[in-house]
Amino acid sequence: MLRSALIAASRSAACRSVVERTPVMRPIVSRFVAGSTVDDAVRVARELAVDRLISLDHLGEDTVDRSQAEQTTEAYRVLLARLAAEGLGERAEVSVKLSALGQALPVDGEKIALEHTRRICEAAAAAGTTVTVDMEDHTTTDSTLATVRALRADFPSTGTVLQAYLKRTEADCADFAGPGSRIRLCKGAYDEPSSVAYRDKSEVDKSYVRCLKVLMAGQGYPMVATHDTRLIAVAEELAGNARRSRGEYELQMLYGVRPRVQQELAGRGLRMRVYVPYGTEWYPYFMRRLGERPANLVFFLRALARR
Ligand code: FDA
Image (cartoon, rainbow, N blue to C red; front, top):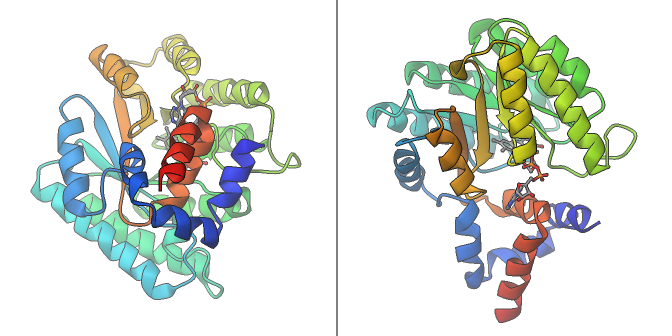
């Protein structure tokens, strides 16, 4: 219930204005968000690149303003040029949300988002790196997967996210487990109805294992995105059963979440990628992170009370 409330708050303009205007919130936000500028993103990427890989996310989502979508596209192109100039193209890729690139525009949204993402893929190819397309709420899944299929025709390394809480995902994993595919499997961060999603935590975890089995047995490159150490152990076992070497899959976590576990796993020689968001549009991303762990909410409420 708490998680649902926070996800609802992540879409509330009134809550957003209170939280964004509360200065004591800054230290809590900075645990999960690298900073507001490209310089901040590159600085954090350089620090993490010592032992980990990185996926950078220029924050933003749900835009219904075409010029905003164009600005976001340009921001990614600037970021990718910087990554190339800094020699970070081999360690750092980018993650994009199609709803930040125009998918939600009332006219031709899907087409516009595809064109914008194509331009980002071109810049990524020039920088020697890849793009992974995030997955948003279930009303966008078909559109997002169609866009990823179209992108892969020209940029075969384009990856996408599948969410284990959706009942359809085991079948989507089978569809996307072919050669060259890059699939980031996560549990899912939105508040979805029981008609399409498992709502019970143990059901989500069981689905995650079923999806992992399909991806590990397939011919693509599985990206295991979870902070759940039991599932990471299962992933390692399934990778071993499928005779995958350590270079044939990777683990992924979010910036600021379980950093010591990230270091331990990287220290054991596993490929560990950190998803690093940056930018000024941090509010919805931050609220979803609060909902994932009650202890985060306690810090947040204390900060609000001190304001
Ligand atoms: P779970 O929530 O069960 O957490 C396991 C343990 O990890 C917790 O007990 C806690 O210790 C720790 N933990 C988890 N979240 C924490 C937090 N916020 N703060 C502190 N500790 C925390 N979702 C989506 O719908 N679309 C997407 O595109 C993506 N993309 C994505 C990329 C990457 C790299 C990751 C790691 C995750 C995503 N997600 C996502 C988010 C994902 O769906 C999910 O909401 C979170 O990863 C939390 O789920 P866990 O798998 O970590 O398990």
